[in-house]
Amino acid sequence: MQRDPAELVHAAAEGDRSAWEELESRFGPLMWAVARACGLSPADAADAVQGSWLRLLQHLDGIKDPAGVGGWLATTVRREALLLLRKDRPRVLSPAVVEDPDPATAVLETDGRQLLWKSVSALHEPCRTLLQLVAIDLGTRQTAMRLGLPMGSVGPTRARCLERLRTLISAQETAR
Image 1 (tube, rainbow, N blue to C red):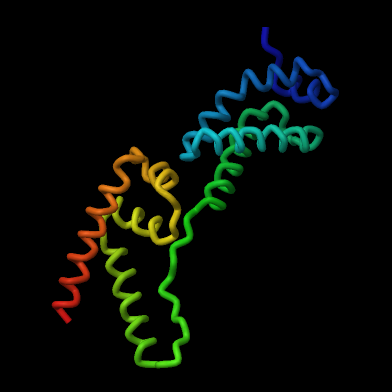
Image 2 (cartoon, rainbow, N blue to C red):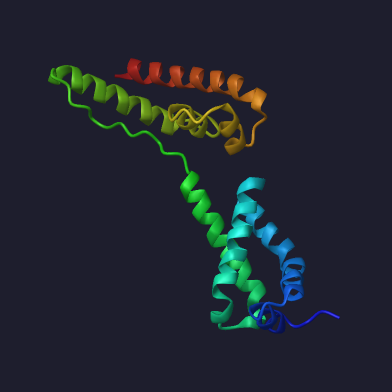
């Protein structure tokens, strides 16, 4: 017979190892499902779940509704997952103006960067994200994971996306 979640929380707070094990067996699968539903890799999901168990340990005595520990754990995993996703989010290079001794050159370079990023933004997925990841030099393995592509298809997909970008930029330059 399973113990009540509130009873498990109180017993775990008092150091009952079997209460911890029952909490883990009862709520662990839910926590993993929440972490994976957030789009985390298996390693990041493990970090989110482990971080949530640590948060529970830190706040065992302060949980207002021990009977709702399952919901508390699910919410905590979701927050941990969002922190990990925010930390790993690729930084898109912006078309920042770099000071140049020659103002005419600086204007032309800025126009070129703006045209490039405007063109990248006009591409459909996965090209838009793939080219942003290429720009920050994320690497083939991480790019494949982020886009959900097999590693062997990143290069050919990148080549097709770059060709689409060239075509788009040529058309925009011709229209000028």
